[in-house]
Image 1 (cartoon, rainbow, N blue to C red):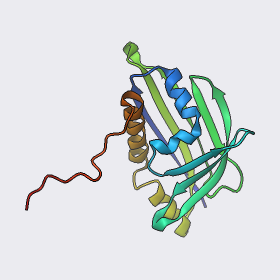
Image 2: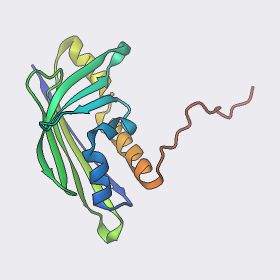
Image 3: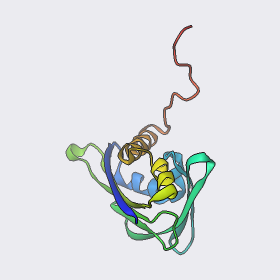
Length: 161
């Protein structure tokens, strides 16, 4: 039996809501700052096909549809029947207090099935889904504010022998 898991994270980005909404609304951009999404293909009917990384080189796929779309305010979605993972969520864009940019809040709910598939799903979303979504939002913030995502991948550790 599936056990729904809900994750909610917020980040403040020093950019106008219009810029952030426009970038996120082009769902094909999501793999640029999320580590687990391999690709998103958008179809003309408002549906999209998602492919995410899974353990041992596997992938998890599903189709989703936009359920709410208010420019510069909110984008909401839900997976369609037959998805590997039943999921839904929304991203909200609202002015940050003190005219400090925009608060971006992501709320996502997914059903983590039991058994081997459930274990793969748990690993896909990390042991701490809040941390993973928080990390994705931190990368989104970097990308939107600076135009790039800073990493230390491929750099020496600084340790000496």
